[in-house]
Image (cartoon, rainbow over all chains, first blue to last red; front, side, top):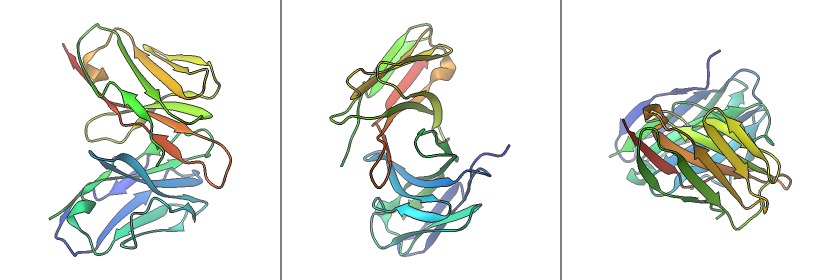
Length: 114
Length: 113
């Protein structure tokens, strides 16, 4: 079975440009998470969805960040406009249920904003 | 915000040695988990613990859920080169509006053949 699929794997962009990261969760998983990983702050939860509905977006840094899940098999994380401090690895993860804490992560999207 | 303190930050060991790392929190958790991240990959779940005092093994890995519910440790016996990576603890509480999984700061493990 395919795992969580993220694209692009790498993106280099200039400050001010719009960035869209994409995620396809594991089929049948009701929960989808977006995490950001940096050396300084480690793994931070940005937002998570249950059955395509955003449940907790308190980790989203600011209004420049937005996330959507139009259907059960697709989610996007958008940054507009991007800034150099947004440079990080962004992970998407999915899970069957919440209480187990058992997340399945994608390979990540490494974003560099110049 | 909530943080899990993980130690040590890094370890450089010889193949065959045993490894021990731990994670502490000022708050109680209902679930403790240990993940491993290989270079260029996302974290992968190694062990999940759901009960205070629980001791669980997965091959050469052994983890325990502290009796106070504020800590956990992970041991790796007879390390091998493929054990290299970053190990993260993670804690979760039930109830409330959300059930966030909080990750520790990570332990970088390097194994010399």
